[in-house]
Length: 281
Image (cartoon, rainbow, N blue to C red; front, side, top):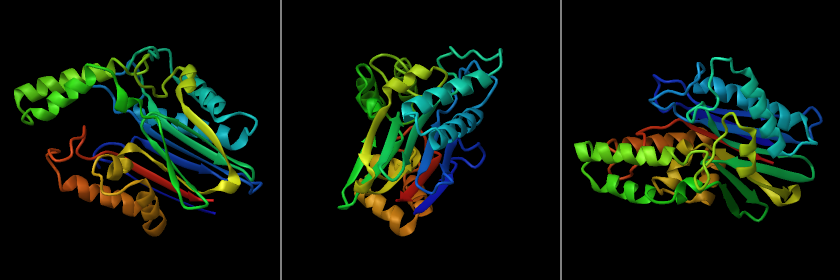
C-alpha cells in the first residue's frame, strides 16, 4: 500500500484551511482517508469566535477517528457524529445558526478487504481507479448547476472589464446570489453545525477487488482539470502516481502564475489552498 499527500496554502501569509489525514488500523486490513477544504470566512463575519482552521482540524480529526475505528457506522453516520461533536465544542458565544458559521467541504474514503466506501460533500473531488485502469470522478457538482440568477450574473461578471466599477458591482451581486443558496434547497451544501446535511452527500461502495487506487483533491488542486484544462481526470491520476502530489500542486501554481489577472481562466482567487492525497491500494 502506498499513501502520499501534499498540501500548500494559497497565500503564505494566511493559514492553510485544508485538512488531510490518514488512519491505518492496527489490523492492517484497511485504511481511511479524510480531506476537508475550509470555506473562506465571509467578510461580514461568521457569528463564531473560532476560525476555519479550528473547525477543519476538529471536524477532520473527529471524522478520521470515527471512520477508522467505527466500522459498524456508515461514512454518513460518521460525518453526522463528527459534525455533532464539533458543534458541541463551540462555546455559548458562537451562533451556530449563522449562515456563515465555519464550514468545510468533505471527502472521506475507507476500505477493508471487502469494500471501498466513499463520501463527497461539496466541491472537493474523489477519483477511483479500477483494476482495468479506468478512472471515475466522484463529484458533488451542485455548485455547477445553481439556478438563475447565478448563471446570468456569472456571465455578466466575465463579460465586464476586470476591476471596473461595473465589474465590482456585478461580482458582489453574484457572490450574494451564490451565498443565498448555501445550505439551502435548490443550492449546495457544506459541513457546518447541522448533522442532517449528511443526507446531501454523494456516497457509494465499490468491491475492494475492483479498486486499484483512490485520490482525494481539494478544488485548489483539482484546478489543473477544472479551471486550466491541462489534463483530464485519468491523466491527473497518472501524474499523481508518476510524480506525486507535490508535483501536481507545483503545476497548478505554475498555471495560476501564468494568468495573474485571472482573465484567461476566471476564478475567485488567484491562488487557492491546494491539497492532494493518493492511495494505491
